[in-house]
View 1 (cartoon, protein in one colour):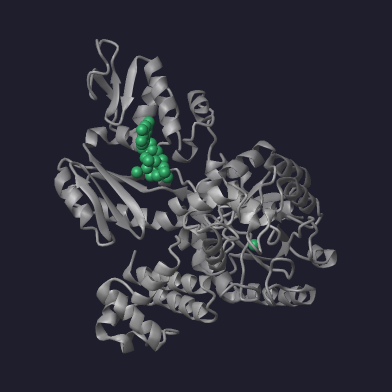
View 2 (cartoon, protein in one colour; view 1 turned 135 degrees about the horizontal axis):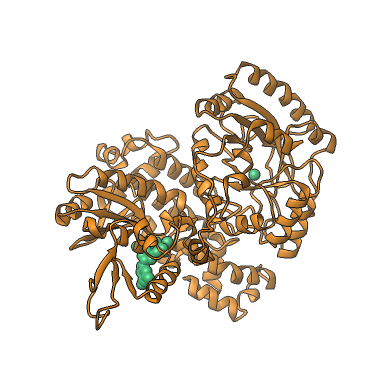
Length: 584
Ligand code: DGT
Ligand code: CA
Ligand code: CA
Ligand code: ZN
């Protein structure tokens, strides 16, 4: 974590604690200051060294906040914050991770019941104590109780989109070291799980010690957690990063082992045992002539271990792509050489869900189209938000504005690179009952309609299923956007019966989106798998609000791969003619 992030976190805690004690306005000032400190290009430590006036040059940072920042940087604490903590000794970060629980609720429940931790909150909810507090009731209590497990997990796991860049950075650093012959990311990050516990890296070297030393000196590492023989752990950007250094001859076996998942490894190891072989992180060994196969790690005759592909081959299996290694049918499929031919990151030819400054995007039509063209996309659908439930203020377009935008899109498309086909669509809203809240006549005129839920995202499973089925039955809808509306680590979203939604989508010729925004990854791998089983088409969309968002595509493709999606399953891998045929 950079020092700016650390200071911003303290200011946000300050804001939460002021809010919890009922202070008005000031919390907003602290949050705005936090945001600007976080985004400021100059290290906050450098500014603080110059004094409070230099810190106050940051937008939205006034003199009072600037002096607190200087106090924090020079002493490591802020006296007033320490006083607020003493007044309300609750773990406000953990408790506000519960959906629907804000700082004020934390303050009230501390005053009434003395709740300071998630465990105490869970116990109070179980005991029916929360419903007795003034302003609360059985419904709020149930909601708190049900949201605690999600809050616990969100405190422990990092979003893939935050961890992957850390892993990429560490990998780039490692492969450049002179003593490293090969290096790879492994663990859940190589399997592209939506959230990760820690980042795992593996390097091959004939001299581990300098590699471990260099790793602890990695400039992005904030602290070294531990360093030993052939392994080390550091913390970077708030995430733990584990490195193991192994002999080149054992790299494949180690890569297989440390990629996991554990359930996959157990199944593969059992397959080895069935064949008189022993598989561990050091290699695959023939132990048929060995009296005690458990006598050591490297016993018998090595039959594989240099490469991961060699390990699977020696076990009579096809190479299993990391995204499939969850012990969910991939072992049998690999043994029968019946694995899917997975979609590749370079396969999609364009995006079918993007925004501009006509709604909540930050860039113009022309800028977004140019950005897609620069990236070599064959097509680009502009799908700004329609007005409707869950879309705030004037952000969404009404029917007249959609018609007005059609002309603007046509003109921008005429001036764009001839190699890109621009489609005009909309991201319409699915209300709680499944009604699409934009006029049918307007929708019928568009090239593409993405329909997404943006409101009532806490309704029960049956209502959610009914809602989404009804939405895909609308004749104008082409793509069901981010089906659950989840925000990873912050909002659970809908929990529909995906088999039923997928069956309806297949029947109606509607594609189900894998939203590649790393905060969403929605549909997730499990839902994609259900969709493909039902014969549904998948669309991998970035939902870009800026040019750089278009580069999130890989997160969507790897999520689709976790759902066993093949190229042919993915709508945006198709030619423009095939795409138009699907949309019409
Ligand atoms: P995470 O970090 O919680 O998102 O998940 P992973 O899968 O990255 O798990 P991690 O970091 O604890 O360990 C990395 C891999 O090492 C894991 O996927 C499989 C392997 N592994 C670790 N511990 C064991 C174990 O006790 N048995 C087996 N078979 N494999 C293990
Ligand atoms: Ca891990
Ligand atoms: Ca680990
Ligand atoms: Zn949306």
